[in-house]
Image (cartoon, rainbow, N blue to C red; front, side, top):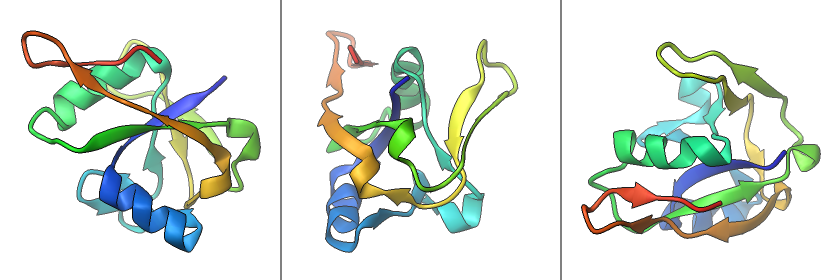
Length: 114
């Protein structure tokens, strides 16, 4: 099953240049956090509105878990209905099969139709 990661365009451009993506979540690296936060398709909008509501210039990385070189685990998150996927190491850019856009609805909330 495809997983997703919300990224700033500049962070993704840096990763393409170096071959690895090291951002865990907004303002933290995988080295600081211990893993990269990811989401299933139904989790993307909730995460983007909870943690990136004031951010612009975002995109969603579309990730093929079969291509990851770092371990992937689904971990329970307090208050969440379902576990979230976490990548326990840097994200190799060749595991990203594409990018998707986040858009805002008429109320200004992010929506995702992955």
